[in-house]
View 1 (tube, rainbow, N blue to C red):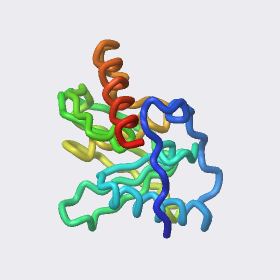
View 2 (cartoon, rainbow, N blue to C red; view 1 turned 120 degrees about the vertical axis):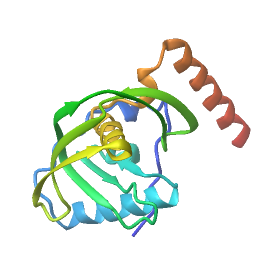
View 3 (tube, rainbow, N blue to C red; view 1 turned 90 degrees about the vertical axis):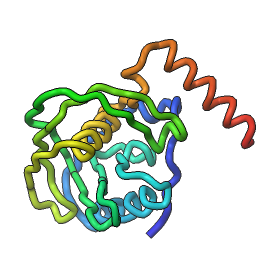
Length: 167
């Protein structure tokens, strides 16, 4: 397994739309394992392939407290949404930034698992938020883009300043 480099906002590669996976093979399973290792090391609860500069429709999520609930979503699609909630979100591609975003309260998602087996899942709470957040990445959208242009600019300035300090 390998730790993968995570792209940071406003890297333009984060805006590239991911392509469907045509075959779930050993290379896809290896990518899922590497993404999971990267997510846990970061540490985070979700990671989209787009964030590691692989533009395939693959997401890994684990919202469990003990890190035993890893799920892979390959070619995921949200088929239904219910309700609305405001929640504070963060992102491994926007380190140290947390903002409130409006999301569906519950979602139904259809995907393939790491073995290529189709499944459907209804999710609520943190898992629903995480699914929506990660699927946005696959469509080339970062959560800060739900914010006002003023807040987006402040975040860009803050991240640029932080990058200069650590360089």
